[in-house]
Length: 121
Image 1 (cartoon, rainbow, N blue to C red):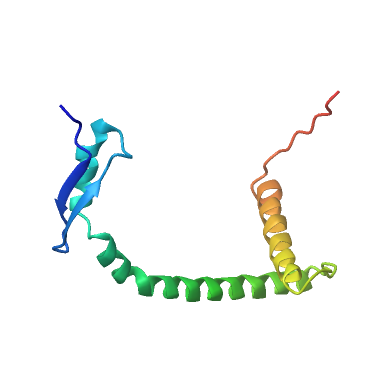
Image 2: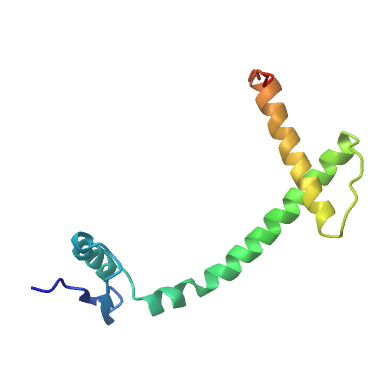
């Protein structure tokens, strides 16, 4: 008796598909096929999520601008030395420096995390 690899399924969007599940372990195919049938088909899923990518990109751009503004204000407030580098590297370095130093301050000073250093022989 051959092990079933092609599974027919009717998706929640109303489309029918025959799916090859030979890349899954044989004992897990039925459960995966059942789960897939409760989802939209790939084409419908892509169509419904196309706008999300643009929204995510806009959100990420706004978030990066907000982080950059906060990092630059922090650098000025604490008189950090200016960084040198390319047009893209300097803003990235300013954000990284801000994140690393504020996280270190929080962990070491605010929360009182103790650090033990040992010398390797």
